[in-house]
Image: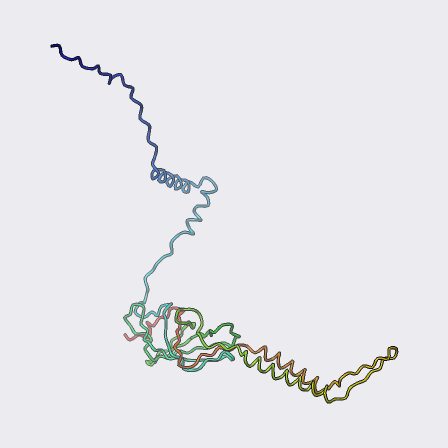
Length: 265
């Protein structure tokens, strides 16, 4: 029995398609772009390259240095809490004081700088307030141990906003009451003069019309002028902010204070 004939092999006659060249990936393109940008900034051949050194100087990082006296430094940004001794009213310039309620330590916590019971001294100016806040500048601290500290510390609230919060009074009740009282007094004088005073009668020469005018009292006119002046003065009264004694206040240390010279050796 004859053997079956194998099928012809056409593998050698197949045409192999050439492989496409793979382009750079997205990451490779980004790396090439950054390298090209760096070479362009270092070249400095054109106007853009000439401006790059100045931009690099502006972008330089600030320097850090160690704190020289951490054991005796009251650093800027420290909060000091105290209780107000004297009442503050914004109508006049004045001085005030408060008692520190919490001990204040150095930046590293090793030394006690301001013991509890230290007295803070401050001052404030009489300005017309527009909000229920009063700006007090605390500039001195005396400790029970006999240390006198010069300080720059503005008053803040519990959340760190500028100014001590207080009771705001715009005096609207007094302004309205005084205006009504003076106006009613002036109207009473006018009414009395018109009701009980003599009348002026005028007869027209050509028309013959008789005109009667009420009596104009000089007293009523003077009272009206005084009323207008009093109302204007009352309206110019500035608002008042009051902070009662015993209020807990916060003070922000605005400048570093070095206690190294007064610390015990």
